[in-house]
Length: 74
Image (cartoon, rainbow, N blue to C red; front, side, top):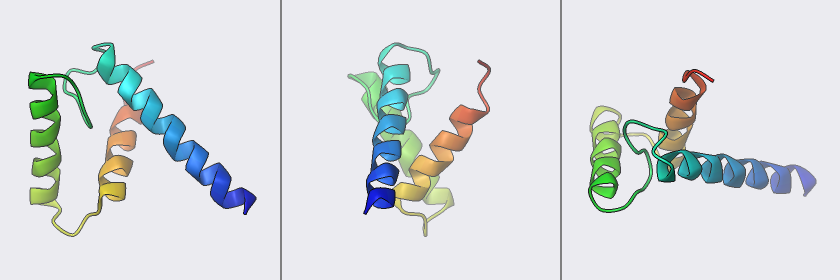
């Protein structure tokens, strides 16, 4: 359906934007990926999230990341 397609596009665009911020060093700590040490930092961040919220899914992790991004200036 059109609503499902639109929701999928929103998720993809949000993740592309998040990766753009990470790849260009615009985030102090990476959230989903990176190169070398930044990938390790992203993985540590995700593990910490699930340690504190063990019942969350990956989708909830990403929603928490988007909420954090929404609080950034600019």
